[in-house]
Length: 199
Image (tube, one colour):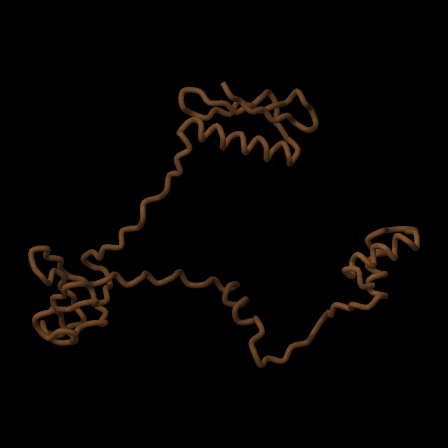
């Protein structure tokens, strides 16, 4: 039986074990919490995935696709109206689907407004319609603020910092990175590296 064990980085006797039994993945904790190193945690997680594949054959289960067929009450757009009568007159109009009659060549009754049947603000039987996409969820105030505060072409902006690509700037950055009392050769070598070999 395959099993994976993760040890605690502070106390190696604290472990958690993953194994497959009866077609299911089991996680068996030890007596105490386990805090593995990040590498050990990744290895353990990969092991759990391998056990899951072993348990169910590695099948990837996907959610069923959303049903896009229009239903009574949906907002629809007319793709093809009645091909025999007043063809094209109602194409691209948006209305509410009020009836679906599969026994007709034009099964979808779409209501466009309060007018009478056959009027552009009334209703009409159509051959093909598509559901109008639901409106996206409105943006939160903080999302609107982000969009409205981003600079646009033509806006005047103030540069608050600029990248200084001078030899002196590379030396200062090298000194920051190397800490207290670096040697001159280390400073020059790191500054040259930061500059891509051009310092």
